[in-house]
Length: 234
Image (cartoon, rainbow, N blue to C red; front, side, top):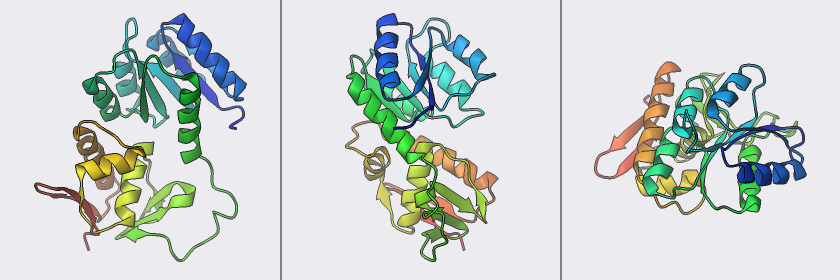
């Protein structure tokens, strides 16, 4: 249980807010609820949350706009929820940087389980995990410290979202090996994922940009007609 982690719940449905808040409080989280995305953005200027649970269909600024806005300056985990279970809605949310997507009506227990999973991926490393190791997977100037949820480029930490980390870590572990988009979709989301392959294309696009900013020699190479692979560039 993650005590004192703060979660923002943004949903204009009072019954959903009430149920979600009750279950999260029971798990030991702090919760602050909002009806409008604009209210949450204003509050973020003062108190930053550890996670956002975000409805898509909101009055005023919708969930997509909120996600796009906050991703310009923060990698805070975002779980999107929506009464619309259309594939295009799910894919758009993932492309904009959300970490997960649940269709309404959903089980509050399932939502709590997803919250735990995301926080577990972001947990701080233990003292034992921080001990030096001679077996860290690498690719060129990229080094994966999986237990610490860190990827270093020339000894400097890269700032990555959860899904960016999952994809780049997987490619580092299997450097030089080509994967189809479908294989990467399943691997990155951690369960059988049926969706548009554009989600992987978007992740690759964002990672290429961050690798460029970090001046890494490593390169995510397109294998035409197949998928992607990571090469050291050396």
